[in-house]
Length: 385
Image 1: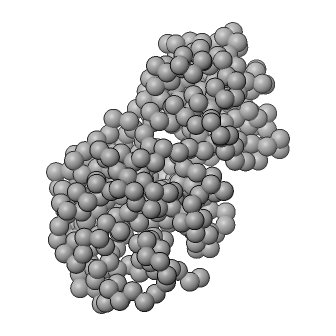
Image 2 (image 1 turned 180 degrees about the vertical axis):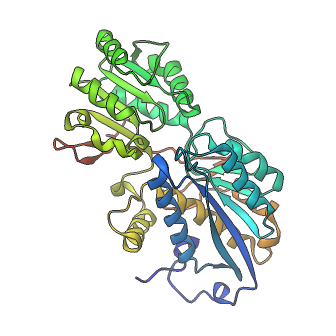
Image 3 (image 1 turned 60 degrees about the vertical axis):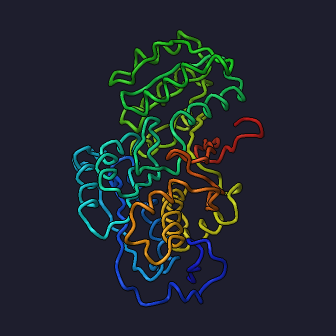
């Protein structure tokens, strides 16, 4: 496969870029911290692969500096989920490395709160490719995905367009669950949706009382506001058996659990799974090029929808380094300032800016299942979002 060296840096044409072809005089490090095990494992591998692709397309060299990507795993070997102590240790490793110019992480919602203070004190740019927790902020922190609050509003918009009038809300005890539930409860009425049980219910080990409560409520839809959990597939099966026509909404990350494969065809019917991003048919040209290169490099069956945000994060960092010129490697503070003031930067997801550490990219897409239980894209119709 021929890789276009200029693609990740936004330079048209391939090869012939003498500034990047010089022998590197020094090494700069970009760390990436992701949970490579558990329910976020597949997404993490996709993001890491996409980061490597962006770096390869830049030739591994920016302004004469050799740039290397250093991988760190923040997942607990016991639970497969991000471990706060490990996240903090990863940030300390990056902060202690004099060659570090940037850090890409974290992924799971809320996990960045354990790395942001450390990297902010060290003056290291941190770009998250997936941590959507609404409250995250930091002096050197930015993210290329929209926050949980926007996801909740997108859920409500699609529910309204699909005729949902009564919603049963179920959540977990994570920061993500709290963020989604709060926004839904505050805004459901605006979308013409009644929340059947405003107090909400937590998904627990015994799902039978919960399924009975949903049946009694006569709600025509259920929203799971939470992270991947062992009990979700069993709940999906049970509520669908009890209420075959009920519509079920959730973040697409719930399919990261191995047990999701145990959901029945009936359970997958009327399922709407949301994720930030765009379906392939709606990607800009740079996004289509990314998908083509990504699949040619890693295989046509490898999931790219999460990876595209790793690609956007790495490409954005490399472009900013490139724009700062030959002294960029000695000026962490200028890299932070420049990235946090990104304006209308072309990317694989379209042009975006960074405002107060947040991206202006606000698009979502939905996936569902066909009659045989196979996943299909459910791109919202015009006006749904």
